Figure (cartoon, rainbow, N blue to C red):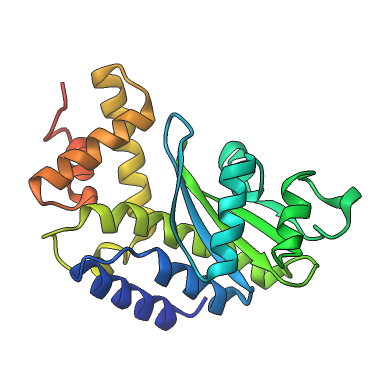
Amino acid sequence: MDPLVLRELMSGLQSDHEQGESPGGRLCRACVDLIDVSSAGIMLRDDADNGTSLGFSDDIAGKVEDLQFTLGEGPGIDAHAFGRPVLGPRLDTPDRSPWPTFGPAAVSAGVLAAFGFPLRVGVIRLGSLDLYNGRSGDLHALQLADAIAMADVVTNAVITVQESAGAGSLADEMDNPGDLRTAVHQASGMISRQLDIGIGSALLRLRAYAYAEGRSINDVAQNVVTRQLRFD
């Protein structure tokens, strides 16, 4: 994936953040353009498996995302649950669709193929990036690679945008996404042990602390990992 395109995306996300706008719409539209699919949506889920939409690229994606919430099945729900990409390339062929209820409903909405990619930080599950096509068929190898890469971008944006108020440039925060994921994962595990709580709840504590202190989550996570900060 073109680093310049990603940098421009980060700049746009920073602008949205400064104006108090959700990153979801921009991220979904970028997925449509970069991966060459018809529509995209981002689903967030919490420890209790409650779901909410961070955004979608267009009305069709919004409708199909709502179908997932309503019917309790679909690519995003499975990707979040299983922690791996879930592919439904032929929803218009009932015996090849993984979702007996969602599949026909999505086809009626104009979606013939649906794909879900998990948003994860280590074992912490945040939700899914959902991609939709108005034509049936598999994603080719480059599309699949770009979708996995964009799922990482979305994961880091979900973490960083929520916690970067007052912490500098969003693009700078996301320059080293692997470092961000590693630090947040390690810190969440340490907080989990310190407070004897689930790792998902530990991530919420980490995010809440970063927000209250006006710091980036990566900065706070580094303090936890280096034992400069404890939560017990």
